[in-house]
Length: 251
Length: 105
Image (cartoon, rainbow over the protein chains, first blue to last red):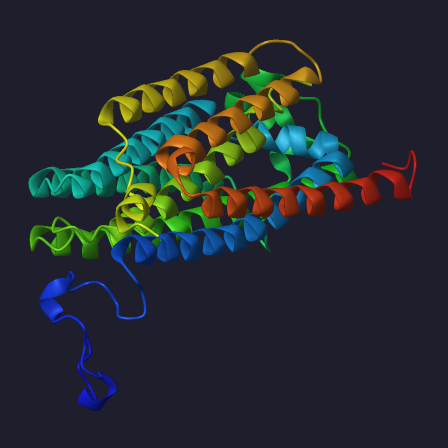
C-alpha cells in the first residue's frame, strides 16, 4: 500500500487495519478487486484465442487445399505419444484446479504439493514433445533446407509408418506440400510449447511464493489467474491433438 | 444498498474438489473416446466426431476448471462475446475460401 503524499488522504475514514493489506485503494472491496482482475485475465485470454485461432484457421484451409499431403504427413505423428501427452496435460490441469482450491481454503502444504505436481507434469509434457521433435529432426521433417520428401514420394522407405498405413506414393508437387503441414505442426505445437515453458517458469516462482505463505492468506488472485492461463493452454492442446494426430488416420 | 447483500452476491464461490475429480476423470475418459473414434471407419464423420468431442472437452474445462459456471455475469458475457467474435471471424474466412474458387481445390 502506498502511503506517499499523506496530504492526499484527507482524514481517512479508516486506518489500514480496516481492510486487508492487499486491497488496492482504488477498489471498494476485495470482491470488486478480484472481479476486475478476473475480467482482465479473460480479456488477455481472448487475445490468445484470436492468436491461436489464426493458426487453426490456416491449418483448416491448407488441409483442404493439400488434402493428400496433409493426410500422409500427419501419419508421421505417433498417436500413442499424442494420447499420453493429452492425458499428462489434462492431469496437470486437474492438479492446478486443486491448487486453486487449496489456496482458497488456505491449505498451504496442499497448494505447494499441487503446484509441484503441475510443474512435474508440465515438464513431462515437454519431455514427450522433445522425443517427438527429435524424431522429426532425425527424419528431416523439419521445414527448411534439409527437408526430405523421401517418406512421401517413397512411403516404403519408411517401414514403420508404411506397415501401419500403407500410404501410396505422392506425386512430387503434392509431396512438397507436406512441408506446409510440418510448418504448421511446428508453428502450432511450438507456440503451445512456448506457452507451457512460460507457464512452468511462473510455476517455479509461485512454488517459492507459496512456500512463503503468499497465497494462503486470503489473496488468491495470482493463483486463480495463473490457473486460467494453464487451463487455456490445456484447451489449445485439446484442439491440437485431434486436428494434428487423429482426423487423418484413415483416407 | 445493503452491504450484506452486496457481500453475498459477490461472495467467492469455492468449487468443491469432488467436482474437479469428476471433471478431470470425465476429460480423461473423453480423451479415450476420441482416440477410439479415430480408429473407426466413419469417413468424413471421423473429423466431425473428433471436433465435437474436443468442443465438449473445452466446454467442460471452461465451465468447471475455469469457474465460468460460477462466475459473474460480466465474465460469462466476456467469454461468450469473445468466442462469438472468434467463430464469426473463422466462419467468414472459411466461407470466403469455400466460395471464391469453386471446384479448384
